[in-house]
Image 1 (cartoon, rainbow, N blue to C red):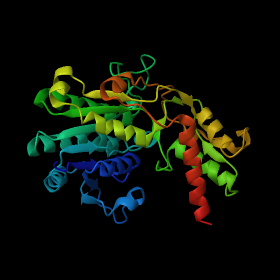
Image 2: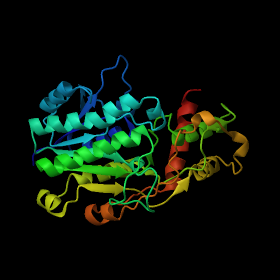
Image 3: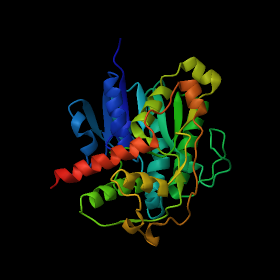
Image 4: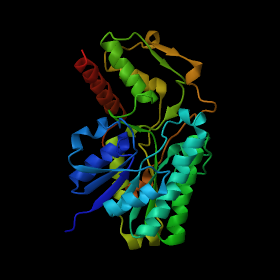
Length: 331
């Protein structure tokens, strides 16, 4: 059997690194697109650097994408690179649009020119639903993004769909709801909480400063979600086009507030009343908030046979435990 090759953009990120782990276990030759940087952040992939091939490139530079395709000759391309911080997209609206919207177009055009048989995965997001039209949200729920991030991602979603229908490209959109892991960036509220709880537990800090505590999200564990990405591209090609199964909501089907996240995180270190340890700051509030997101993963379960393995409580426990371990190692 011929070994498959995969090209992952955003391989240094949380999802990219977990997907690389997963594909290596499946026996793939894994290539990763890495932006040129004087000191690239390779913390998430340090354990697999000898098992992957990194290629310098940028989603906004079409020539570098063409070069990456020629080097990797991939069977599958997973586009996970993005300006991924929703809050920052208000101040970085142009950059967010260039990377999250036009970058998808450049990559699709490069694939179409190089080898139209390459299977393509686009990382869409539940933030596209924004001001939700129904509960829960599924593949047919209307979109109403509430941030430059959501708007740019919506373009990436629709251009992927258009290339699939116009050029018969095997291109999938994974509408992933919030998912976390020990590798989540420290600027995200979930990791900010688990890292803060770890520091409070160890006596390093005495409080966490957050924004909106009322937002409700559908949270899952990232390693479970990268499996869904892979499953989308393993569908039978004939059935894929016949049944028009290119877009999938990947979610837990459960909704939890930031307050509930705090409950579990502090509970894991034996604190039941966390109010004295949490401060709110208006600076961390978004100009327009998405109040509730809740996904319906029925289609993914039925068509792909996918289901999550790690629940909400276990995910948070793992993250807090890992952050405690990180800070203990610094002592």
